[in-house]
Image (tube, rainbow, N blue to C red; front, side, top):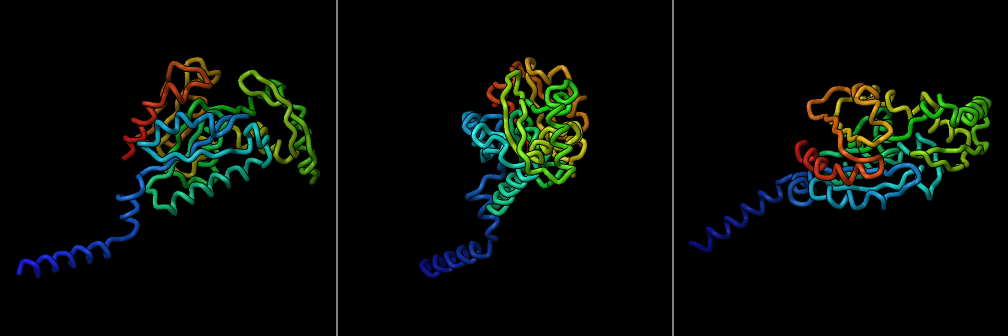
Length: 265
C-alpha cells in the first residue's frame, strides 16, 4: 500500500512538472528576472565597464556591447545601425525569457540608451551613468561646425558615402576621426539622435530611469532641466548626484545602482 501511494505521488509530481510552462522554468529556475544591455563611452570599450558589471550581476544580468564609437571601431557604422545592434541584443535576451530588459551605459553609452528609447522604445528601463556626447553644444561652440555642415551638404547631394575627417572631442581631449559623411551627420547633427534633451522628451513609453551625475562632471551644472526633467514621468525614476567625475561615476554609484535595480522588482 505504501509503495502504491509513493508511485502515485511520483506520477502526480511528474504530471505537474510537465504541465508547468517552459517560460516559468526560465523565469524561476534558470533565468534571473532582469537583464541589462550596457554600453561604453566614446573611444572606450566593453572592458572598461567590466568591474562595474561584475558588481551589478547578482541583481541583474549584464551584457556588455562594443559600439561603433569604441576606440577599435572608430565610428564604423552610423547611429541608426548602432541602435539596431542594441535592438538585436534586447531581442536575444527577450528570447531567453528575461522578464525585464533594460538598456544603459556610461557617457556616450547613456546617449545611445536614450536614443534607443526614442527610436525603438521597447526596453523596460534605462540606466544613465554620466551622460555624455553633446553635439549641439559642440556645434554651437564652433568645435565641429564646419565638418558637420560639409557632411550635411554631401548627404543632401546624395554623396553620403564620401569620407570626411572630424576633430572629435571627449572630455577635453581631441582626436581626428575619419568616417563617411552620413555616419558623421548621424552622430554630430546638433538636432539629431545624439541630442539628449530631444531623445529624452521623445521616449515611446514611460519607463524607470536612474540618472546618475557626478559633481565634477561637465554636465552637472545643467542639472535635471537639461534632459532628465524631459523624460516621461515614472514613479521609480530617480536623479542621483554622486561625488565623482565623469569617468569614475559608475564605480562610485555601483551600490546605489544595485539598490535601484532590486527596487524594480
